[in-house]
Amino acid sequence: QVQLVESGGGLVQPGGSLRLSCAASGIIFREAAMGWYRQAPGKQRELVATITSGGSTNYADSVKGRFTISRDNAKNTVYLQIDSLKPEDTAVYYCNSFFRNRLTWGQGTQVTVSS
Image 1: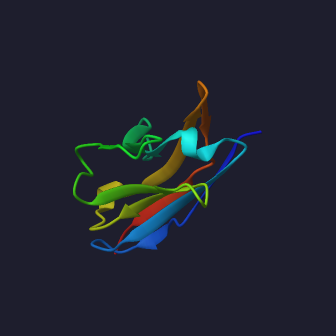
Image 2: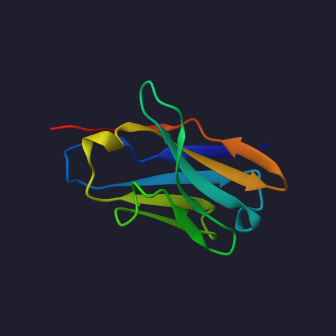
C-alpha cells in the first residue's frame, strides 16, 4: 500500500522559511515522479512544484525563485524548501506520487503565514 506522510508545516511570519518533507512508502521511490500542491481556503488545489524520477523540476510561476523542490532517494523523501513566505502562501500543502500509472496523495500539512 502506498503511503505519503507530510510534515514540517506550521505558523511562520512573512518573510520566513519552512522546509516541508514527504516520506513515501510502498513504492520504488527512485522511479516515482513526485509533486507538491496546495489548497487555500475556498480555492482549488493548485500545482506548486514537481520533480521527475530523473530530477527535473517544474514550478508554478507564483513560487519560482522562492520554492525549491528536491528529493533524497536514499530516504524515500521529497522536500519543499519555502523561502520568503507571503500571506498568500497560506494553504494546506499536499505531496503526491505518480508511480506505475498510479497517483497517490498524502494527507497534507498546514502552512500559515501571518504576523
